[in-house]
Image 1 (cartoon, rainbow, N blue to C red):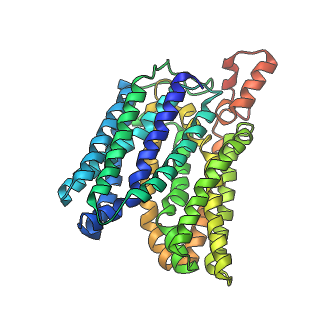
Image 2: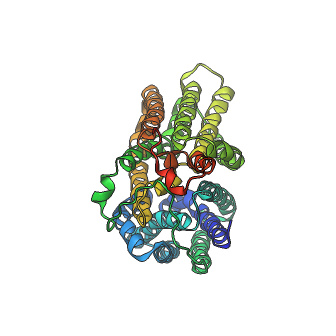
Image 3: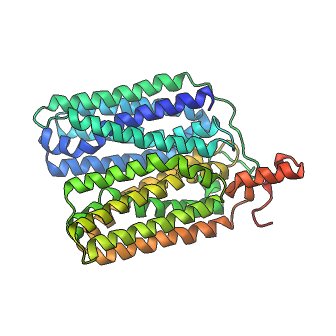
Length: 425
């Protein structure tokens, strides 16, 4: 890694550490500590999603026009102000406005930071850069949540104010770190589309491969991430009799799997076609849903049910480790020159939609319709495999398997332009 990328990763870890302080305790803070009730706490969570859906359609164009770094700095300042004001808010209006600012800032941070990583990496280093980002995000969230849990006291609002102040400080520290990053000219992977426009959504929608990847991405986030904090815990408690402590163990197993497996699987990922890696993740998640079905629908002891349920989360973590160095670099490599910000924002919008719809559908199903819930998401996981293999037919070799494309160019003594040949030419 160069100096710029090291600073990016340090800042990313700090911001994830700050988020880990507050995210697990937001509901308790609003509903109980501030005494605003469950309805207001639910509205706060909804505001996060709505704010993201409102700002993301404009974030891509701003990144294209202004560059990713200024947009990232503005998003960080907005998020810091939202976090600080949320820690001080004492009424519903102030809490909701603060949540909107925090949610909007966090939403814009995602595509802006992804575009910064794209611009500061090369085709050879991009997969490792995104793998490192995902690794540090999960590590930061886990450590932040662990420390935050020992600092909070539901009888003292000041303890939560301290948490939100620490979160704001982490965002501002990332501002300082990112302000020192010297942005190079955005490198381009040979074989990516060369036609460019002025950030229009119409042009993006004409890119069949990007549209297919967006559909695939929606199902990825809907069938996995959208179930982590809603449908799957509800299913575990109601169908499998999982205790709250076992739920915590399952989440820890997910994080541990990511931390342990991320760089173990990276070499495997770099030597395979990206779409086949995504297809493999779909199969792994299908096995995870089968394990969840065994835990809740099988006639097994409580110990076996708990072990199967924890294994479900661990298998999800293994699939996530496969996807982190695969999907984000593919989004960047599909973007025409100068349009990475637009494409990253579009994909972030797809992610937010999936994360909004996933809990709304999965929560009630997981709590009441145990068998249909498992079957539905098992089918979605197998659908991921099918759609990934189908997407592979739309990609060039340089987009789907950059390492093989480069090795063929070197072996033939050609130039990088040769990498633009279609994958099945």
